[in-house]
Image (cartoon, rainbow, N blue to C red; front, side):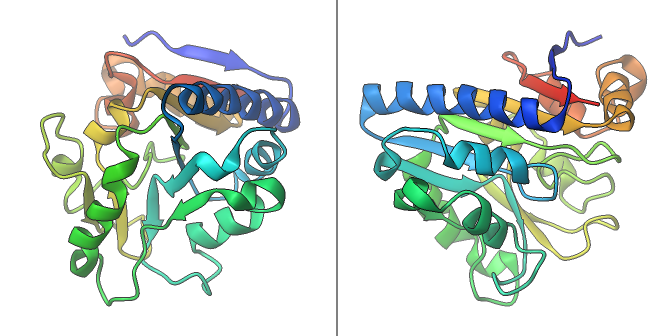
Length: 230
């Protein structure tokens, strides 16, 4: 069974503030060492409060490059766009000075933009900070059960840094960072909320949950710090 680095908070507000402070500290350390820091965040509903708390942190945002762990293949005018969520909840106030590197490009398929996206991401790697979420089906990033390229995305030896993926539970086609990119992040966090997701996480950490994609992240040599609240 994988040992979980689980930090528990009484509610989502306390979690968001603590995670934002921890991420900001990691970004400050990176800026002090290299004058540039890179951050990959997740979309969805859960991280909104955290993103707003992070935007309020005091640091040299002009040196921070922000990207996404994954993205639905939709433009920012679509309410399901992760990029639109990041612009609304993180990139405002002082944090608007950060340089944003979206994953979506205005082409029909993610396959059509892989080379361009890969080139845009290269200066950010290895990531200083990556913040993952997790769905009730055990997916993280766009590592969906049944995904057409799931095995490739989860291959620890994969050379690809970004891949397209389609899966029954994913809705639109997606583009995602691959497992090696996430494992190489200097600081990796997993943000989950609710008892149901904690049960999924506990299952993924044990021998009965190896089919859950998030288990591949938990198995990293340096497993993620997990921030959880009921």
